[in-house]
Length: 264
Ligand SMILES: Nc1ncnc2c1ncn2[C@@H]1O[C@H](COP(=O)(O)OP(=O)(O)O)[C@@H](O)[C@H]1O
Ligand SMILES: [Mg+2]
Image (cartoon, rainbow, N blue to C red; front, side, top):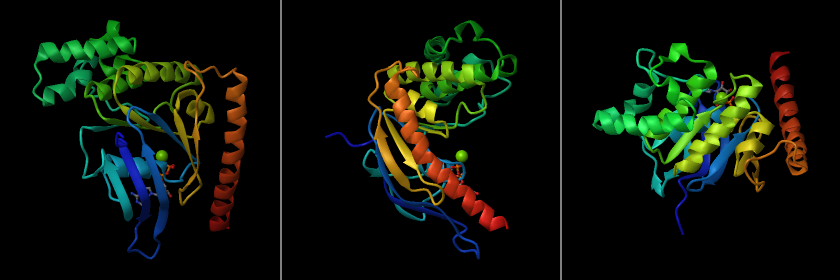
């Protein structure tokens, strides 16, 4: 049996644990990300999704519980676990070819090999004709495509994406999802993507982990077995959308009620 790429066992995270106002953000979170799988974390705002990605990225430590990467305890950040945020973090002074190949240059890989690999990935996201443009010359969607190419250029075992398409308009978003699937399918990477969009979760995921409102717990896991490319007009897509909307509505209502009682 192959080990999961990531395994979370009974993770808890309490922010400001020593203060007079500790904040339990994650509670007993247990799940596995199988090798090569695309998992989506879906949950209301503030439930701890970004916190969980931070822990898996090794940027912070859980208050209790275990985090394993390929069966070994996870220790700090590693280039094997890449991360992409809502705003593409590209170097403004480099063209996109050099941005995509930047990580390889840090590994001492020569210019010819690095450019060949970077160009291949730019082609996969439709950016090859723009290879010599600076990030400021590109649209937001193009920048985010370059950021995905850059992350996958490093052949990470795991790629984490924190609401990567949330700042883009709806048409661009749906194209971005196609590019992501194309890049992922040619890589060996496992992906853990955070979104609060039900449609995005169904469009992308092998497996959807639905979170409760804070403290975030896994409410349910749903395997999505619809064939790719997924069609939002497919009745099975709609059915799943309704089911997830019901699950999410309970959580959003709970989170609102909590916020309002805290303020009044
Ligand atoms: N570094 C931090 N220190 C203290 N509290 C934090 C920190 N990061 C996040 N939080 C709190 O943890 C809760 C969950 O935040 P977050 O993980 O960003 O949620 P989500 O990504 O699901 O919207 C929020 O109440 C937030 O204020
Ligand atoms: Mg977040």
